Amino acid sequence: MEPARAWGGVTGVRVAPGRAALAVAADPHDLYAASYGRLVQVLTLVAGSRAEAEDVVQEAFVRLIPRWSKISTYDDPEAWVRAVAFRILSNRFRRARHAMAVSRRTERGAPSTEVSGERVDIVRALAALPIGQRQVVVLHHLLDLPVAEISAALGVPAGTVKSRLARARIALVPLLREENHEDV
Image (tube, rainbow, N blue to C red; front, side, top):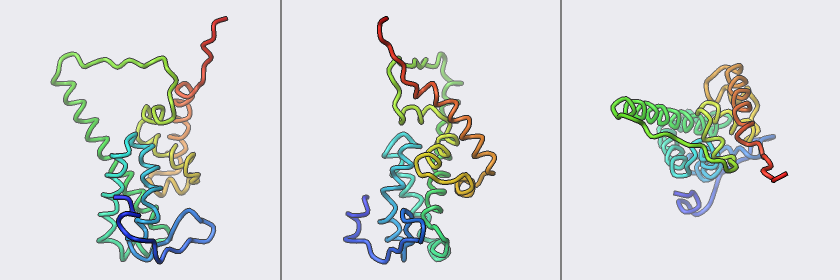
């Protein structure tokens, strides 16, 4: 449910100095109202589906509520919710990949996938990346988070973040290249 419909207004939200986009909330309702939309946008790019993104963000907030007394003391509770949402999404993708692998082993002749000759937009290009690469691209290039913050948010070493970024950039080049198909 969109935060504006859940609560009449946002109260008790303070903006952390130097990080205007990150709100420090007095209670989980305020954090939800202040960050739900932003988190859904980010997770939509990673998940490739707004419905999936809404689901994982809501689940992350559900997990926040019993831990609020501790998480509310963090400098950036939204980062905790984002990290939990990314983990939930990663687990879902892993389970789906496993289910598909099992299905392929039990079926004969898995359907082939054809790549269309049309231009590929950003969402489709991101969907072609593995989840780990997708996460770091979205966090780094769309949220402008530095490598150190991404490392902390995802719980992986900074070198892993850099490696995933480099591999993602290499993979995205052919997907995002605009080619001229003019007759000469």
